[in-house]
Length: 51
Image (cartoon, rainbow, N blue to C red; front, side, top):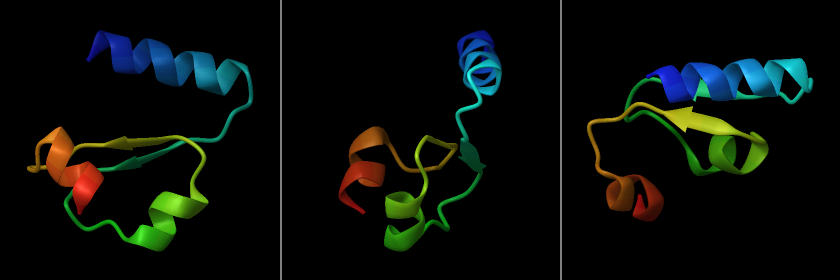
């Protein structure tokens, strides 16, 4: 997780909004509305991308 922390720190420093989703409960609209998203999901990468 150090890379994630560094990325979040950099985004904050550049004043770029981001959000964390810590479940499989995300919607198409939320994914389309948010600029940068970190997803912690039980799904693999392909499952998140195709869901």
